[in-house]
Image 1 (cartoon, rainbow, N blue to C red):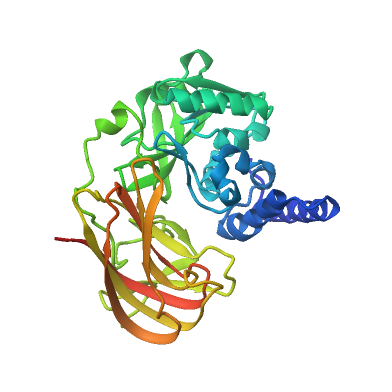
Image 2: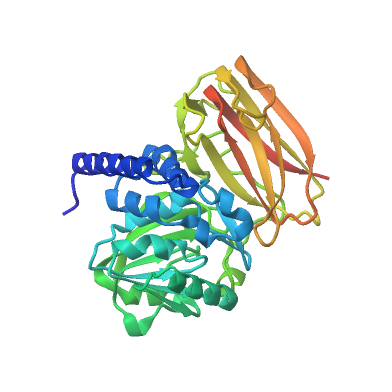
Length: 407
């Protein structure tokens, strides 16, 4: 039986008080302080309530799992490139997937897509054993050495095709998949215990759904959790996709009229922090719009969507949308303002460019359309469009977001 919500909330509070007292009683440790801020400003406000998951997130040294040049960014809620076209997932996604898995001390867990090893490290104190598989040999060897160095003795690493599973250690109580196939690989279904849980993102390259699967007999019962975005897979599974992204950037549900997923999550978009869809009869397109409200610039406030974008063929793009604001105050720098933004990424998932529209979204203003043309860095292979307050305070509404190639 799962603990009650009131018990979880009390346990969270008890642990946070203990963590705060511990931090105050120990010599100043900047990484420890940053982890505490990550838990209090990002994870708890956005639905991570399991006290064991919060404790693991608040004590696991994420800075050890990122390349040295990114150590100071380790506790920002962002994905970070780790080489071989892979990334370390954002802390929120790791916490969300871990909580959905409902890890128990006696569980034997299979992880598909070792990557940096961070997800396995988060699971390590929560379960009996973690068996993790990485397809990229160089990455797998480096991560195996790192996990051994950091004394994660119950994490067992293997290099190979994760979608074939690890048959000699099956069946598994839980399976967590940190790369996104079009559908659940059959060997993983076979190797999951009857009644076991699997957390997996499935779907098209830039339109994926994070799902919780429960095995009943030889079938999986699916519960759609929320839209998400994982980086392209390595190997045949990615090359053999049946549905490939269009060559030019295409945004979906740009006016937020499509029904919500699970009555909560905005369809087609992901990383939904600090916003909801509201009825607005004055909206520029349709009768609904997305609204952001915040009185704390340290709490995330954003909504994202990924698209394919090849900078070798698309030289310029036009980005735009409609914005209305109420009592908006900017943050400490120019990027901490209500914005329509685009980030450009190369084949290795390194950010190679960033542009935004938002310098004028201050105070109170009625609906107004904004559009700008930006150059696309030649190395670009994909992009992420984002809207939100981004550290500003007040209220902002967005509608009819547009992105098109300029020929």
